[in-house]
Every structure is written in structure tokens, then in C-alpha cells.
Length: 528
Figure 1 (cartoon, helix red, strand yellow):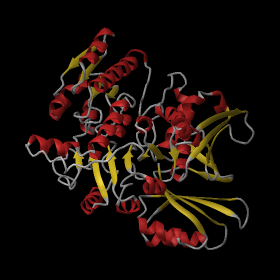
Figure 2: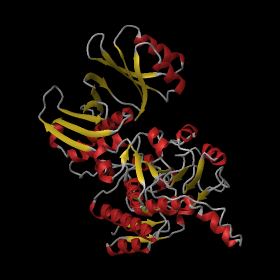
Figure 3: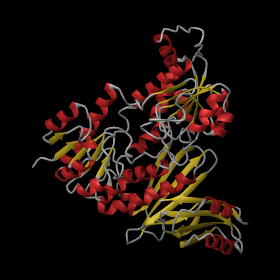
Figure 4: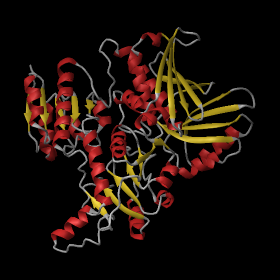
């Protein structure tokens, strides 16, 4: 029997033809995604679901999808899909991360022109018969400095277009190597330098805990007087209230936004501000982009249903059925090692080395490398997956090295991840025990034995009496319960590391108290 696929959003008819040509039974109901009850009633009959942003694939929908094997999102964002619920049911979630890059980059350039020359306001004025030629005095882009925050796939295209306009480009991106910056023709700088030098600032980074409100009142105060801000990436990257105040005061000369903290943006603090250009999330809205993502998602879903091939999956690596049982625990280990290192990395990455020792060296290490890179990048680039992670590394000029060797110690298999930044090398190693559970066995050369839980406290400290008691007292008095506690040190009285699993998120004020304890050098909360 042919696999059955439901398309529940508006998608190019070319996608329907791909499914049909490949022998898949496709049902095209572009308005079904808006009717949650009806979608839940019919989804159980389908093997695949192709969507855009209108369909909300909630836990309830997934529970009703008794035969569903794959969800394909035509586009990048998947916040309308409950990925943990899909993963728990063994449903693969795919997206098309590269189908609309040029369209989004071009929209950012268009918005920059619009705000620089006040084109929308001038259009309204002229069509009202006012002919206010002296009112709209714009600025040239030529010879101005563009600050690009996030120089990945879309950001690098914007940078190239800006260079073609004879602008100077500076870029802030922790994952952008000096070599990649040189290839692009941009100058790599830190955020404060970008703020101080840029005449125009454009954002092209995902929304994560680290990037939320990356342009806030403090950042705007450091920016040049008369700066222009463009955001065609994600709502929440800019503190909208702070930007409104800066627009009203004249600190910011103008802003152009395609995305907002709350969407649809029926009302917003930025609306009505002087020289504020707004569009309703049109970054990917071109005929070409819609066609690209539709074709890609149809091909990906068809490939998986017909041959088992996995492309651009957010919750599953590219692993064959034969190797999966042995490899999957090491995929989890590699991703945890990457996430551990990524959450502790504050400066620019230059290189990544992954060493496979023992039995694991004979496995499909490409999948493990992809998993490690995905874990490493995800704290800053939230929408990265195992397929896109190697591409991101190449785009940013980050050297990735794989090393295989025979077993040299007591463990049958060891995976060691070393990252090289502008300031230091940092390493973390782990293994998988016979129960299939990953363990951390070494951090920065210090022997450990720790299992990573959802909420971890990482501390580096001096190995002297009194530290453990002070830490326990601080956590206990704050009502934070300790689940597991692991210690390691180089030697008596030297550097030591403490990994503590706790039962919930640690309040910021408690973390600050821990960081201020005597003997503590660093205290950071990690999430897995």
C-alpha cells in the first residue's frame, strides 16, 4: 500500500506533484491546519504530514496520529511542532533550513534602503497630495558601516550584498572564524566594538537565552548616535520598549522590523514611532522561496517514507537501521559532550577536535561528529540539527578534526571533544556504560564520573577544605535539592571541578551567591 501524506497548509502545487509522481497517496487540504478538532480527527490515517506555520502540531494532535512517521515543515521555524512529543512517539520532524535564505537576506537589504530614505512615509505623504520634498532627508548607504550580528547562512548573504553597495561590514558572531571573515570580506569584532562603529545594525541570529534582548537599553546606549536598526530574524532579539525610547529621543535615527516579540502584531510599542518601518513577517514571502521550501520538504518526506533516508531532521541523526542499536547511545553522548562545551564557551570558536578511542572508533563516527557539533552550536544557534551542524561549521570556517585510535585505557570506548577558542583549549570526555547510559569521565584533564541530568551546576574551585560544606549549605538554605554530586581534582590543593545535579532550575540570586563563595572560580548552570 502506498504511503499517505496530508498537506494541511498552503504549499506550492509543485509539492503535490512530487508526491504523486513518486507514488505517494497525497491529500491536499490547505485550510485544514486551522481546524484543530478536524485535524485531530483525520490525522490517524496518514504516514506523513507536510505543513507551514499555520498548522499547530500539538501533543493532542500527535497523540491522535497513530500512524504518523514524519512531519515536514516547509521553512525553518518549528515552534508550531511539539518536538518532544513527536520524538517520544518516534515521529521524525524535518525542516528546510536553507530554502529561503536569499529571500530573507534581500528583505533585510530592502528594509535598510526603506528606512535610510524614509520611503514608506514618503509614499504615504506623496499619495496624500502633500509633496513634502524637504521633509524626507535620507542618508546614503555608500561608505557607511554595517554591523551584522550573526554571520551564518543569511547574515553572510547580507554582508556580501552590503559589500556590493560599497558599505564597510563588521560582524559579531562567536562561531565566525578569522579565516571565514577574511573570505567574506568582513571584519570580525566583538559586540561592543560593533555597537560603537556601526551606522546600521542588522540582526541574523536565532532567538536563544543568550541572544534574547541582545539589543537592549544598555546596547543602544553604546551605539552611535543616529544608528539604524534592522531586524528580519526573530522577534525578541531587540528590547522593543527600549528601542521605542531610543527612537523617540533621536538616539536611533530609524528602525525596520519584519519580526516582533508577539505575532501577529496587532499592536506594538514600536507602532507609530518616527521613521519606524514595519512589515508582517515577510522575510520568506517570495514566489521563489515558497517554491524552494515546498519542493524540498516534499522530496525529504518522500525519501523517508520510500527509502528511509533522513534529511534535515531535528530529532534524529542519519543512521541506518543496522547500526542504530549500538550507535544511538553514543550519539546521545556526543551531543551531551557538545552541549556541555557549548554552554561553557564564551569566546569565538576556531577549531573542534573529536577523538574516538576503542570500539567506538569503528562505528559511523560522522554521525557522532554531527551530533557533537549540533550540541556545541545549539546554545547559540537553537535551530541547528545534526544535518545542518557540519554546514554551519564550514560556513564559519571552524576546523573540525576527527581522530580514531585503539583503546588505551580501562574503558572499552571513549569519545573526547576538544574545542579551541581565541583564548584557550577546553576538553571533555565520556563513555557509554553497559546499561547504555552516557557518563562524563574527564573535564579539562580532571578525572570525573558523572551522569548529566536536566539541571546541572558546574563549578570550578580551589581544592581546599570548607568548599563542599559551604556549597551544600547555600543550596540547602535556598531549597535547592541535590540529586547527584561528583568531584574531581588535578591534585591536592590544586584545581578542582564539581558537577552537581539538582532537581530544578537554580534561581539567579542563588547562583550568584554560589559564585561569590570563597574558593569558587566559576559557577554556571547547565541544562541538558
